[in-house]
Image (cartoon, rainbow, N blue to C red):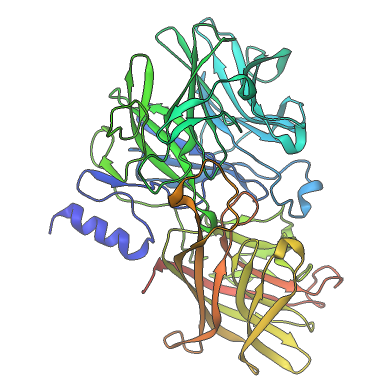
Length: 564
């Protein structure tokens, strides 16, 4: 077997999804995790990607690649969401929305919106950090999806969209001048695109009206200003491109990428990036429900001053996503890697894949209290994890995977519990709980968690040991979508991509026994489902001390492809 064959076999053994096929080609998605609203910048031979992070902390993950296919997490650009006190508890669907990353004058810049507070910028000389504290660039409430642009004469601009839930209107794009450093918006906003005034555009399914235009990126090529902006909603939309000889318009409009004859719904919102060799590529996402907004890579070429993204089998100028393709021309073959997932907890800091569900306190966790283990202190919080910030979670690594961890449970108060969770609007977890008659092993299910629905329990062991191995196994399951929340009517979209999860436990780390019924995971608010760990004390319990509440030690968090 060739070296590349061995490499891909080794990567596939532990990774749920490996985009690099080891033969000079890749398969989509290039990121199977929920890296929503991706943006990419190239600096020399290196590519850097960031994405939305919403209420998860640290925010604005930074990923690095040499070939646009193999990615690893190298850091985060936002240590905590601001204002700090507001995000001391989960604010589902709030926080960091679609960002844009740029490199200028030796510094990396990320512009990101919090739709309740305005548009901010953070900067760094090293993309791995440290990053500066956020600076408020534009205080406009409801402004989202900002992207900066510096014209040939050095004039700085900021393009943005609007969230109807905050601004009271949407489907428009505005332009506003920035000061030369790009730190502050100046002058009055200029509305350059209004979807309500546009004629329907030609798509692979007929004429489509323009609605939910958002996520703009502004570029310049051969004397034209180009606004790349998705439209048509997240689930069922497409990628639009607008062009004009003047930055303030008027702009012509085209649909340049849609679902076409594929099963990849809503292909849109991302970044045009050019390799050092001159190839053009487009990085975008696809909403896959419980699996989140996965990232895809499309070849891109130009014809008559318009981009064609992906494949164009009928040569009508409207691209559709590719399933596989030759890798970008970026030089020597790179090692096959995927974003981090497993964690041995042997390092002095958590792996970069982990995020809290609110701004963390110092007493939530420790990697030194029990060296080689992650200690989660039993934090007083509502039993509904939807309302709990002290949930440590990460993105789903791919379609099929198994997670295994060893739990050492040391409770003090009745009602304390700790476990391994599959989390979203509906969630389930397996773990240990201290009751008035002892410790029990349970699988907990809470459907419609965002509505405060009641939880149900399946008891695996009424008298459980304090040390136990926990496991969950996930696989995709498509179910009818009722009712659909998208337009246009794409027949292959009329299904939700749920994750079917099975839980099991072991008393010796070898033989695993199932608990409860399979659980159907659902996405969260603007995010996919997440896998996570937690330790809780009942709401109202005094703040954690060594005398009042206990803790849970987790020894290893192993993520493998399903069946291992």
